[in-house]
Image (cartoon, rainbow, N blue to C red):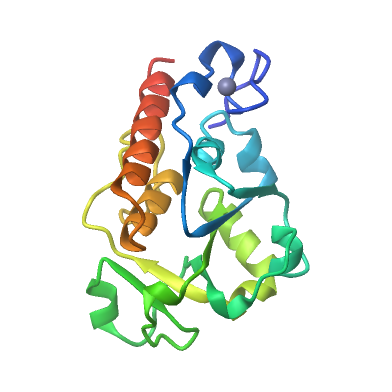
Length: 206
Ligand SMILES: [Zn+2]
């Protein structure tokens, strides 16, 4: 799946310089803090979209690596686990009702919590296997609340990149959907979806 990256990369959007999308990125502020933890292999993938997300969302912390000691260590500033939620990869055991809800934040035990209590979100970026690796190598993630998505829309990746499961969206799409449900301005989701579409369009031309 991985294509050889021959041309030099843009230091800002991490795409090939010939395909730089920096001038198209609309940078916006969010009330919700965002932490993207990206698997090193995904960071090298030319199809990676996470950097476009972190460039769009001002103040995002974007780390490439496999493990960090704690939320504070990953973030580089003090933070409390109880105020943060991670985009959950697993399925919830208990409630079929929860699984039908397009957006829900729950405790470790699956009890729904008020989304307005969440100050920050963590997104694990990589393919299914890489994301799982990040999940298991960072046990502090277990202490965070969990964001469970069941979006009715399908990913815009189309044939370009197979998603592990139909409900799996790209990192940008998941972020957009989550921030929309956390009552961020519609401009934020719009900016994310526009840049993602440009990314997909330009990669499809290869
Ligand atoms: Zn660029």
